[in-house]
Image 1 (cartoon, one colour):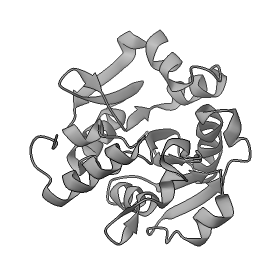
Image 2: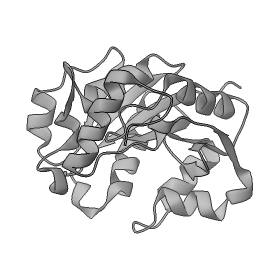
Image 3: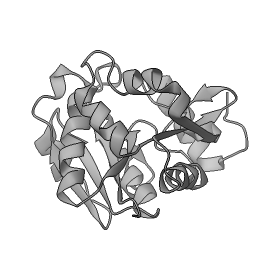
Amino acid sequence: MKRRIAAIVLAAGEGRRIGGPKALLRLGDETFLERCGRLFAGEDVAGVVGVVGKDAERVVARTRPAAGMRLAVNARWGEGMLTSVWAGLDAAREIGADAVLLHPVDHPVVAPATIGRVVAALRDGSFAAVPSWEGRRGHPGGFGPEACAALRAASLDRGAREVLATNAERVTHVPGDPGCLLGVNTVEDYQLVLRWSVALPEEPPQ
């Protein structure tokens, strides 16, 4: 039976080092959350779930969800990212999804082709699938039905990393792009992503 895949955009953190929720950082006329929603809505997925937490009311009020995107609030966001994964899995189950893509909102410039390769690996029956660029693992991570069950049982301190590490031989690695690694934690990172998003060169700017 064909897997039904949902994308989960993890956007519940407080963005302490950058001064506020990363979901509301902007690229052009879009917030990071809006851009990620649009990226995944354009792929072969059943729906997109944006999981918000810190300042949830403000984030929801300032977000124009892409078509097919719904927002879920994680009241436990302060306990760690895995609680947002769980909230996303619950929302994905509500739309009948049995496999998911997990993607942090602070990685807004991943290439659609990378997303497509992860989706294809899940469609082919992979336990889990991850993209990589120059030997480094990036985002989004794809998790099949068994892997989703393992995520629900994972420890709060290790989360998805634990699932991938303990099932390393079952993880499919697909080619990624520089953007799958390009995350935002600091103002300097944000400036880098802004330059990258304008030019979209083959190599990220320095």
